Length: 78
Image (tube, rainbow, N blue to C red):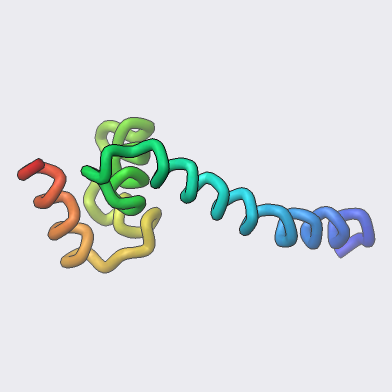
């Protein structure tokens, strides 16, 4: 990997975790405690990919299919 690409990758690795943490903290502060972060991310993914499969959402969120099914069922009940 060229030096500039390696430096860019290193910079991204350094800056992304604090940004994600800040987003999570802000989301938790703003939400009405009705949705967990994975539920929110699931709804956002489905909004961007309306005809997606449960497998696609599970892969994106990083859950097993049974766990994603449980999460989606909880969203439907809410």
